Image (cartoon, rainbow, N blue to C red; front, side, top):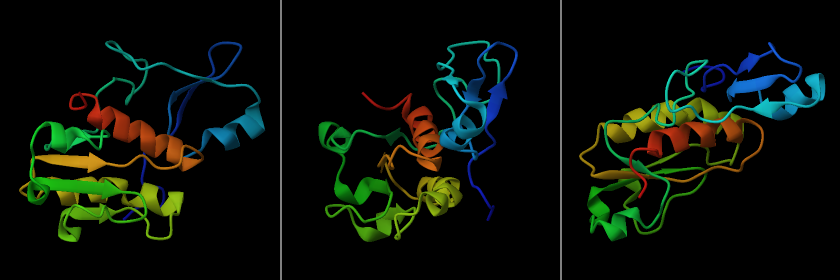
Length: 156
């Protein structure tokens, strides 16, 4: 267990406007309140300026998809599908195949549980992990960033 759950935020102060190189445990809204205008760096295809900037990163060994239709398109039975959910179970996937990040819909709790949830689900005998994005505010931005990077090689 860890206090924040997602890695640190990385900033670049070498130019006039600070650039967020990696979204992390310090929410962008808090940084903007202290620093004013910020830019968020684009994903890098090669030679990143900081860890975690490549398009694909933090991926479990089982394909992860942010596209709820993925399992249907690939004819994956519900019993072979895992789900990483924000605050509630997915109705058509067995609860034993799911990990809920925060039953209270708390983004801080969800961030603390993100990598635990991925590790728990990747140890199962599943063909895909269907992940749900969380609200895109506060730590949710960092969680969604990690989910998008984990899904980069899978979603199609």
